[in-house]
Length: 504
Image (tube, rainbow, N blue to C red):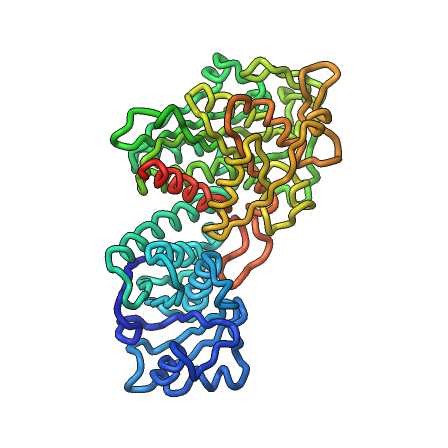
């Protein structure tokens, strides 16, 4: 898809369709809409007067433009974005996603989006492009019939009077981030038989080779040498060997961590989760192909970082394994030893994500990480607590937690902090080992984080439980159902914020 920015008037754009944001209760005889109404021969006023469109978020109205003195575009899509004072990045991305999905369905090939947002030109352009690219993602990769073949071939972000250099930077940044999100979503949607830990490692190598990242992949022999008994206990039941993927970005002027600090992202990459010996119910088990979303997010983030080129070093770690039942599988009651030397009583083999993350976090620390954000589709309990609106965040460093929440807010991704008091750690104390991998029914999301906290000693650490937000069960105007790519944009923004702070 050809992507460009325009600082000229939308009426002069050589596109088939215009997509224009409309605010709630906006009047057709005032300001921007008055001009638009005049250019379209009274179409806007007639629609608003008839109350066919009120500007509520997600509402749309579509028209053919026939006037000789109007815009060069022959189609117009008005998109409600809600109250003007509440118009934020989330609304910009959703407006753009709604625009491309709606217009693609009508066979439109070239679109100009007029987001009508105030503020930083680069950010607005980026958000619009991100939303448009994300909006074009669908689940039909493996269909041979009923496959969406229509494409948007040209996308223009129209910001009249804006700085040309800023809009150019923004559209390019948006392309990089949007593609990273969709890369992550595509990985999360891959069937478990077609995306094994070995396949994930190959995808990571492709990223490293294409974008210039350093890569190392630990096989099971090397993990054994490192003492990663916790991670390896998960892969015992599978014929597919585990892989620990290490990607590193280092800015051109640096040779390692900056000022002694190194930010690391650590992701859970369970390419398929049966639950192991603690077998899951069969209903909906097919969705467990997306239990590697945390690892996929790390790969997507690192792909974007390699192109954005921030001023700080970033480490990406994806712990990948398949959790299967077999005669070799870890059994409930077994005791395993983690890389740190801690012993773990495995109460439930379906609480495997924390077992692989324990060694992955410890290894990130060994490689020099001082600040770690781990993310995982870790607990079903988080869906009960927060539904599919907020992802959970917990940590041992309030400043780190606050940074992630703020970075998410800027891009329209929501994280809600849960407590992590010392009392919760009592629930994971084992009678026969140092700790156990589950803490009972109460506070399941919190006790899972308490388990990971045991391996984050000496780190500024935040944990994201994205189990409730990583997969969408329904279609919305701006996106398909399926994998959402949650946290990709937040973590990229976190890096960019740290980079800017470094340069100031």
